[in-house]
Amino acid sequence: MYAVLNRAVYALSLLFALLGGAVLIVLTLLTVASVSGRALIPLGLGPLPGDFELVEAGVAFAVFAFLPWCQLNRGHASVEILTQFLPTGFNRFLDVVIDLLMLAVAVLLFRQHYLGTVDKTLYGETTFILQFPIWWAYAAALSGALVFVLVAGFCLWRSITSLFRPEAAA
Image (cartoon, rainbow, N blue to C red; front, side):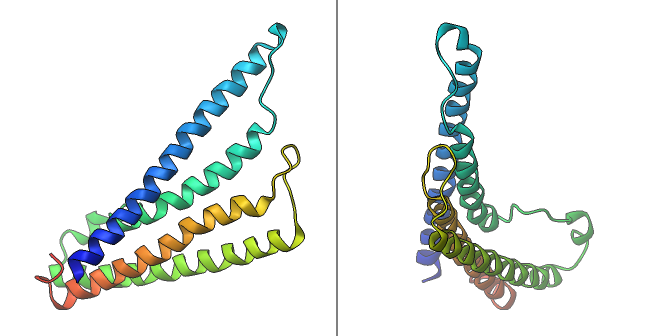
């Protein structure tokens, strides 16, 4: 069961990381086109309308899309210079504590982001230039926050398993 769940969580995290990367590539091309248009105003071109609104929404999604992959691969900041000399068992216990705290942070982020999404939906707020509903961007980022919660929960389970049965989580 662990292997199947591990593959599923890995695939979901990778999918979101790749989606986040693809969005950033599109946003980069959009920004290049918009800046080029500004530079070519004398030739009748111009900036792309609403470019900053799209960049703002896209980057928000990308940040939340990368969080699950980062958590799954223990890519968050750590101070290994302090823990490398500690016993393996203590480091496993420390992993459980860290993953529990990260799950709490993920749940808090998801909850608050969910409330923000509901708020933006109820008020019907739209972007200034493109006039698309702001809740669309919130909902896209919320999907990444949900996957972050799922992955953080899996990582906690993985750490607990490793603490009590190191051979099972290998």
